[in-house]
Length: 127
Image 1 (cartoon, one colour):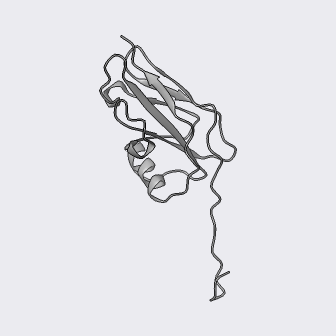
Image 2: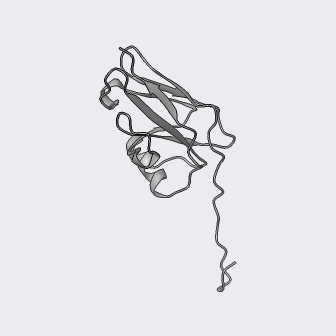
Image 3: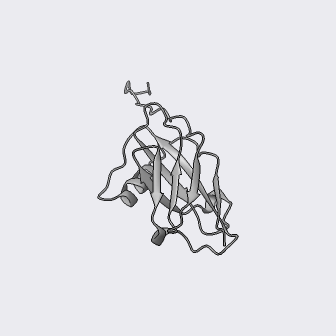
């Protein structure tokens, strides 16, 4: 309670996603999956350009309401043989708002309602 007798609603952050795994598919797309989190309503996937291991540089986002996600080949950052892509999953107890998945992910990211990020999923492009 604050000094004016008003109640402040606190949103409890959900648990972080666990056991995230991924694969670079033959068609160039990326598929991820992870353990579902109790009461989770949405997940935001964060990733950066090739070989960018610093999570603060994971400037791209995806959105899913299930514990799996696929990044279309056209949206995968350019990768040469031996390059790595680092992906992180963040859990939310609310769904994103917006007309598309990018807007939904941005809404959730903007409002800082999510869990800590998962350990990175590191995928390496093979020749």
